[in-house]
Image (cartoon, rainbow, N blue to C red):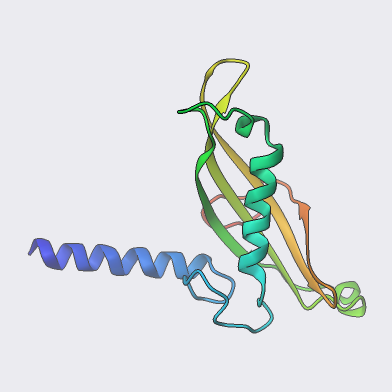
Length: 140
């Protein structure tokens, strides 16, 4: 019975992660290659920029480094007529969380960022986005 419960839990986790993915896939790569091709690399760039610039990620001391990065949700947004006129073929909002270290108060602290990605003729661009529900990416 424990094995069945473990398999069921794994299946539910995989299904839930797939629901957050704009392509309906929870796989880490860009196997879909459709309008979301290249998005995984943009998430990696975003993580690297957070590591380089976020105040919670500045310490390099053991036990104070940023870790545990997780994209908690991704959601495709509808394209506007202006988007289509400007060659935008996809819009995605994503939320990312991590564990960092607050240098002012000298304790661990969680961080979160939300970004909106747009794919145009020249590739993906990223801009900050207002707060979203971290599970569904619905605007708050």
